[in-house]
Image (tube, rainbow over all chains, first blue to last red):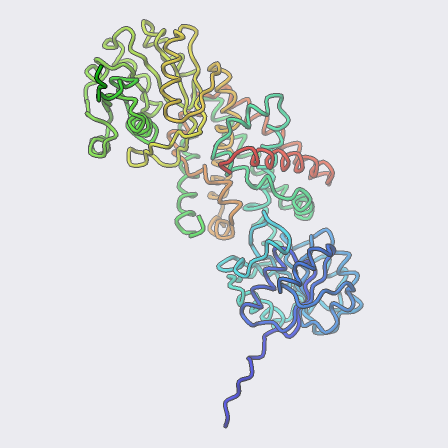
Length: 300
Length: 300
């Protein structure tokens, strides 16, 4: 037998990405870098962003028609802002062929699951909601990087209807990008990220908004230093995106805000009563936990 | 006339530093780098830290006796933890000569002013409370750097009794280290730093302590990402130091905690009622203010 020099068959013959920004664009770059995808079709609202993505090889083709974009795609990735999720699902639903996998990258998962049930009912066996945990400070195709997902967490929240083979395929796609794939229920996902992501964003927004409204805001910001800088970095995040996340995950976020208000009120009482030992205990528990976390995570 | 090759007369013939850590040690290094100080005498509790400081030229002499340490000093710098402030003032008070300048580096200023009135009453004309705004994540002489104060803020909060010449001398000392010197009243100082420093520390401690107490703390921390990392960095700070700061500045800090609890409760109500426009307004104001601040500050 002769050895052939044919390239390996890619995992995905055609991938269609709605929203070629930091998240969608980085997925395309990562899969291309691994030789895992044949053709990447991009759909997006900003012509200049799409043109840039095409010229820089993130995508192989721009498609302005949702029906055409899902035609022949093995995997459809919904990576546009979550506010467009319902409209895009509505547009593609009549054109998705049975067996085409549909996944997303949204920061909340119960709402995506509900939208899939509403708009994509015939395709639920092939729907695999997903959430890659990667930075959101930058946006647009220009911010995309082939290594964005290296050693980052990716959470899959399959539906009751999702076929195991569909789940395995999407899991393999993200593992090929270097991600550490975990599975959770949509409810567990939303509870976890309300605590470690959505709540901190609201807390940072609240502090900066409070201080910015003061008569002496300029003086205050003038004396803010590195601790303030780090604490408030996430308050520079996209207001629209975080309004959408807060509304989409309001049940879990309200629960966390109430828990935090109670925790902070207890610290306030300890301070008002001069209970230094209580303050010290809380600060020590937090400091120890934060240092342990830092030691366990290379990225710090 | 012959030109002399004598070195310039230093600004300070002898400086005595109580507490040769990050703050006191960096002051010594900065002044030595500028040729601004003749002899630096160090006083401290940790023999190994003091020996290291001596061997590495931060100080020229170790002095274990407070009376001897202030004898002949032009400037005495109180740079030990704020919890030792009263005891050190008590120990040095009988030995300070008239005209010796006394300054400190504490993060709160009304309490230091009160202690000076209590323990150093005969010397108030020469007392100049000060607060250099420099990182506190590291500690000890090994963390000291000659450039720590370059372009950093330093706040002087002179007493009603402080002589202008004393204020000018301490101001010159810090300017020689590269600091940007500002003057405020002790009350204004404590109000400003309650808002931009003390409150954020308490908020970060509260979040980490709350999550660390959960049954699923390991899972939560496992999915925390870069936003959480930055937001909670200050929660790894010294619990003892921040307990002392909170207690020392409890009036201003309680005011800020109450203001924050009200701000956060209002956001909670907006979320509970699904008022996306209110959330968006608050997030937009915060995002704009944070981005403006970032653009105005090179360190971001």
